[in-house]
Length: 114
Image (cartoon, rainbow, N blue to C red):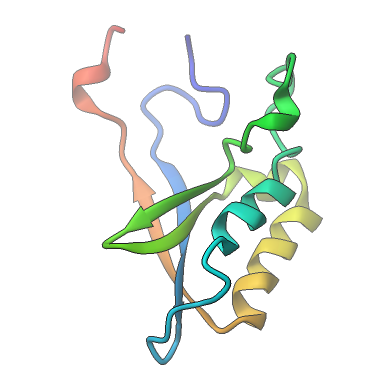
């Protein structure tokens, strides 16, 4: 099944919001990433809702841990789907002085033909 977010073999353009401020302090509360992703859970590709979709994170805004730091991965596709939601996430990072890292996830070369 093709990825609903990006075409086959296209790199996913994402950015990561780290749970650290620009001066290296840990951002609080400790569950900030899950809260942010919970707020954004309704933004998803067309047709991917389904039963209990409200209980799942959006594939565009996902919590993760990077080197022991709570973080959020934001897919740039959110900008096309809902510009105001994208602006909200970007503003959240800026308003809280959080570190942001640009990322480009390349497709897995071993995944061809699956």
